[in-house]
Length: 137
Length: 137
DNA sequence: TTTGTTCGTGCAACCAAGTTGCAAACTTAT
DNA sequence: ATAAGTTTGCAACTTGGTTGCACGAACAAA
Image (cartoon, rainbow over the protein chains, first blue to last red):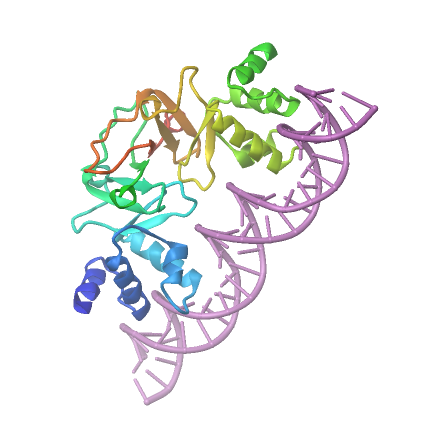
């Protein structure tokens, strides 16, 4: 299991330090996305700056992706194994207005948009807001 | 012209105070969206809190809509005349990674997403990132 | 093994955006 | 004219994000 995590880091060319293993473990256990402040609370004693830089490193190396769901804090989630973070790899995110959690809808790709002339496309952030199945009960 | 602005406020049931007229005037003159800090700079002496509350009022009454383009500050833009801010009224926004401006692509409606079972839909925030025609020259 | 360099971590400080409480000024209805 | 409700301005604060710096671990070369 921990080997799994370690090899995941290595496969993305990230040196597997103790800190990074811990952070990746937490990320792996998440069902929904997680923000930096939330991540902080998962640790007894952890430095915000370190966690911040860890997330940045992970993101640069395409181990995780970030979503701005409009909640005020950026959320992070593991990328799919084969993700290159190209526009065609992107999926829709769902923000529940009740529990404030944001979920990756990995099965729903971001629709292709026909941009007006001379606009170039680099990436897309698509967040659908509503109420999640758990909160609708 | 100012009558136009005033009547626009009234039509949305917003009391047309001096401050609000000024703010709406600025908003009307924008080609792209504008953030609260940017709006602040448009006035010599203006209180952040007042502008903040003015924008909130405008938004609640569906005179303007907000977009979180991931730049760190929420942007605002006038709604189309007939906009009710329903999901089917929503359009795509474009964020230029060079000039950092965000444009309403009013002609491009947000695509309809087929959500998984038991997710309800309230609204959608869709931001396409790339380079705008002006910056590509 | 020692040395030097690179990289990661922790602490503190900082910045910017957003937000709130409160009192003064202004409206509006009675 | 007065009371009740709204809007405004000021100040203070919260929070998320970010940076500078120094210490320490890892690592490679001598």
